[in-house]
Length: 322
Image 1 (tube, rainbow, N blue to C red):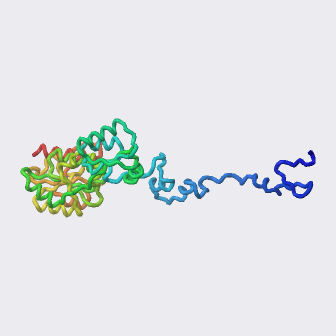
Image 2: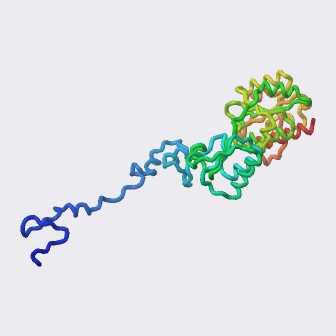
Image 3: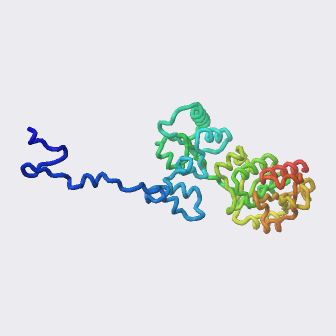
């Protein structure tokens, strides 16, 4: 019995002889050396980050690291005509924003906010569609939608010539606001809201280098965008020329203006108020088109006012003077 026993792991090769692994097992158990650093492993996100060229944005870097931001949230945001998330959609409906369609993901958790949205949709006969969560992800560009999204209709801009004709046909002295490079949609929405509040006939924005009527601008206008026309022109200075030839006095808001807001010449007649960009103010060519540069007196402790705030103050003062 003892003579027939074999060591575990060995095999018999011929009588009374045993065969080992030939060193294969021992070699297989040997280590492969130290683990390479993360940035040296070609498949690792740290390696990809190391290859990033100077000037790459955080968004681009996040996409290279697997489609997620540094906070771990998926990359992707809804387009300009989408409002996503339960609270944002509810607030948008409360603000009277136009609705093309409401989308609810299948199996979305029912809570009080979703119930509020569904109630508003039923009361206002809004189109409501149920889609898969994957489909809603695709529609909203991977944004965090919480199972709910709202699609806005494409905004129909007025033509500057039509706005000009309509404003001159009104019973009161026309007042039109021109935006020269307002790139923040929050500011644009606030300007539209002030224009509606103080009786302006409309707002004109340029086609390029300007915020447009996105969901953010709609929301910031608090529904005023549905009550006052917004015209889009290809060339702002050419449009100013057209209004000037039609008899409008053109005033530009500028901190260094030599006319104070309370003493605008021609305030009782057709008036164009031009507000400049948030950082640079009025462009040089736009300044040259203005009949007067108007300033709002402020303390020396503050360098300038926010563009939408300055517009609101100017429109209030024009309304008071009239």
